[in-house]
Length: 398
Image (tube, rainbow, N blue to C red; front, side, top):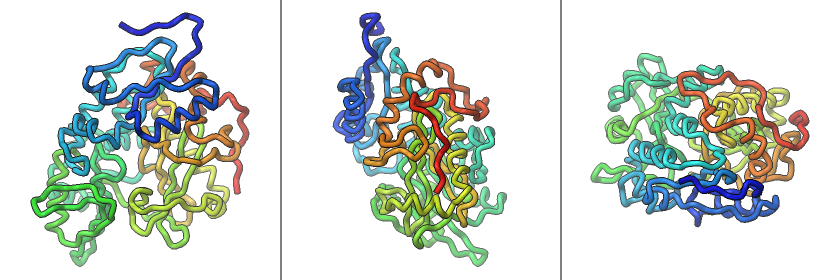
């Protein structure tokens, strides 16, 4: 049965997470600073083992990443080696089932939204149908699965794409991503964090490496294909200080509140793969009056997931910083320690977690459980339905 409390009790926070993760301690600090007390933690491991969990009617339920825990990973992916790349389809099915087993409470992460965000093919389709700028993709939506490298080659040829990103449909943190470039002369190169061992197994590595033979690349893709693949055009990105650059924009309650520049000497800008934070002020100066397009694109992407309080939107700036496309929408993309809110966002002086604490009540009033739009009927983006309680001002430009 659902847990209940006194009718006049103050709302309480519950975080479903891996309790020893720094995400939990950062969020707990934000809740405590706001006078909400210490959140109750429900372990993903317990949810998986118990077959679900019940929440009280007055509990705000916030889901956080199930990653970085070997025991949880073993249950979700069915492997005892957390560095293995394979198993993402099994992870997706089991994690979505785990989310569905959570009952009651004031939910801030809609299960339907999560199911789409964690399938890059469905996410791409939802964004594209809502008019959000995205890289062209031959695997957008519910299309026949990519079976092997031969299928990837055929899709590239049919679409006239010489440079593509091949991604695990249910991957995260650049796991299984290959940036592939080909030439008319037959040369080929794949940049990836995937390490292929002598026995053909694939492991995630913190070192970005390059494969330059089609046989090596085909072997990796053929091994990944059973988990589901998404292919999209590799758009040339703008640079900052001689390094490739993109943006992670956090949107809370429909408002773009935080942004960070990620730069790298490789096509993969993830910070754990050697990417570094860039100078946001320099980017805003380069973008000039087009900075508003960054905010608009991020907020339009987030509007496609109306039942989820917070998302991290990855934006790909075109050369010259005049156009922007959305590369990913991340359900757990708020881990940006010590980063405070954008000027005019309503979250000045707050980190990403404090912004969520400040917005949760108004967001929940506007977004009741089950309101999220199905993947094949995306909600048209519009003004945020639940702005921060803080006064709104226009986003400042450089």
